[in-house]
Length: 166
Image (cartoon, rainbow, N blue to C red; front, side):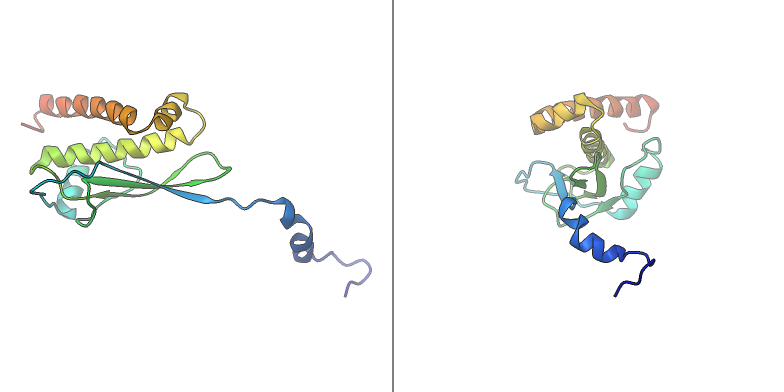
């Protein structure tokens, strides 16, 4: 019951009038992972080893999400992001590191950099400000991995020059 001079019932107005005109955003989860290749031997790692590499060898890289070790994924790494419709940008939910194809620190560094680059490409492609990364993302895995492989090769080479890697 409304009294003369009282404020209108905002909730009732919203439910009866405004809700029809407002579209709820939908959340799309993007998962990017490496190619699943059958290999006879997979080499495990540990969360402590990943944390050590992130704080020591890769201390100049600010990760979009904390890399976590997950031995159950079938690839070397996996990046999961959420994209909300109607809103530019993406949120990186998790970066998971799985068992590696080769033992050693270099392979783990390669995977960590690879997954962070995948995350940054997703963020920039969905920001609406970078035509280069939007085109790269729509072209697919081949163009993305060509770019990522070039960046990783340069980074690994710089780590070798600094004496961090043999």
